[in-house]
Length: 221
Image (cartoon, rainbow, N blue to C red):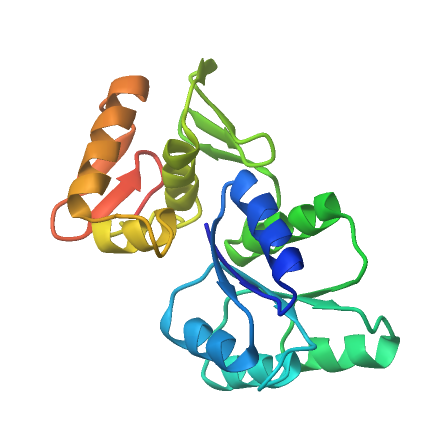
């Protein structure tokens, strides 16, 4: 999953990015409102963590602009001003959750995972697709009851496909969601990743739909 962190305090932004990366997210950072608005408008994110007290354009205005432009990815607001009127304003502007500062990183990660699950129409942290079972909390997988040793990148690949509800996903879209802005990622890298996963789990798990992309076997589509 790909996350956008918008936070003007550099140390806080880096802590958030590190925690989200450890939880399996690819993370981009924006330090001010104009950059946040632009990135959220042109890039395809699965979730955003948005601080309200931003320079140039405040966080609430950024959120309103996204929603006016039909950008529907889930947004969790962070704010040091933890009063109910601000919470109401954030929710009415289109936020999906609100967390006051200071906060526990474990709670933030749990809330972010919950937002991503609900956006994909899933209620549980465990996803079953045929005989493949993914535990998004522990970042672990089994196939036909057998544990599968996966790298973080391999898990992110399966996790992203599992959240697409049977839709075939192109190599280009997968590369956008699996690699950071400074990491190489193209159709060749995705193909190599698919080959590795088929060797680990079995050739039948990942289907190739020519002209469309990849999907997990047993997930419809």
